[in-house]
Image (cartoon, rainbow, N blue to C red; front, side, top):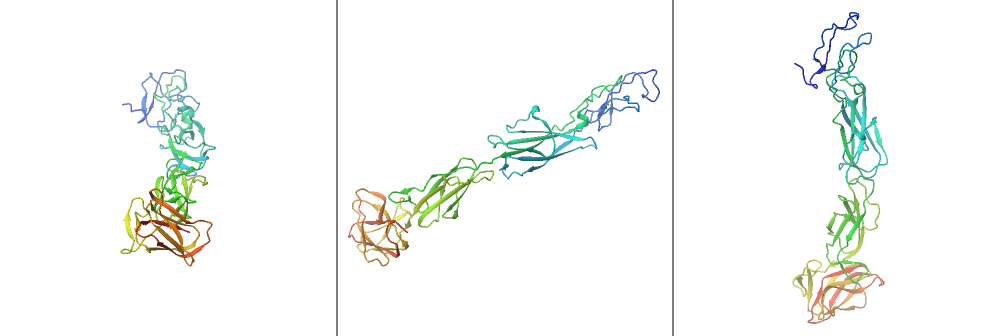
Length: 396
C-alpha cells in the first residue's frame, strides 16, 4: 500500500517499452504503472544512468532542516530589554535524517508582530541589525529559517526526462517552524518627577513637613520604572506613586529621586526629581508634670502638649542653632512663652496668640541671619491661666 508523503518517499514509476535502446542504459521496461512508495530519501535529484539519462523519478525529501537561534548579542535582561540599538543574532541549522545537502538561511525582523513572506531575505549567521528605533507598542521579532539549498532548487514533481514521471509531492524544503526571538530596544532614559512634595506649613524659607513621616508622590514617563531615593545621601525605600518617608530625623532635608526603566536606563538628570523641605522635631514632656498630651490628627506625632501653668518649661538641645521655629495650635486666647538658648543672657518673648484659630502655626523666633548658638533650648511659660499649646520645634 502507498504510504503518506511524510511517512515514505513516493516515486512515480512509469515504465514504457523503449525499442532500439541499448540494454543497461535504461531499466527493464513495460507498460506505464502507478507510482510506488520508496524508502525516505535525502535528495530530490532524480537517479540517472552513466550516460546522464533518467532511470527513475525523483524522490521528495520530506524532512527539512531544523533551525536554532544560538545567541543574541548583547543578551537582553530578564525583562527582555536591550539598552543598545545594534543587535546580532547567531543561529544554526541541522539535518535530522542524515542529509548532507548544504544549508542556507532566510531572516526577517519586524516590530509589528507580523510575519509575511515578502520580508524574508537571505542571511548568514551572525546577522546584525543596526540603528534600530526604540520599541514602542510592540517588541522586535526576529525569525530565521533553515533551507535545504539543493532540494529547494528542485521541483520534485517535475518530470526529469522523457517517459519518466515526477514525484507525487514536493513538500517545502525549508523549516516552516522558524526559530523566533523577541526583544525590546530601549536606549532612552526615563524622566523622573516628584509630583508632590511633603505637605507644608507656611512661613519658613523651606516647606516644613506637617508630619514626622512626610509623603511624596513619584512618577516617571516610562511605565514599569523602578525608583531609587535618598535623603541627604542616605538611601530610603520608595516606589512609584505615594511614598512615605520614615525615620528622617529633624532638620533640612534634600530628597533625590532617580527612575530606572525596564531596560536598565537610569535618569541622569535631577531637573524635576528633587524636593527640599524641613522636618521639625516633636516636643515631648514627662508624664505627671505641668504638661499634658492631647491627641490630634493634625499634630506632628499624633498629639501636642498643653499647659496653663506659669513657669512650666520644655527643653530641647540644639547645636549650632541659627534658625528657630516653634510649631503648635494657635488662637485668640493663647498664652505666651519666652525662650533662651544655652548661655544667652536674655530671654526672648514669644506671644502665641493669633487673630484666628490655626491648627498648626509657625512662630519664627530666630531667622537665618541670627548668630549661632549651641546648648539647651529652654521654653518657659510666661502667661498664667491661658492655654499654651506646643507641638514641634525646628532648630538648626
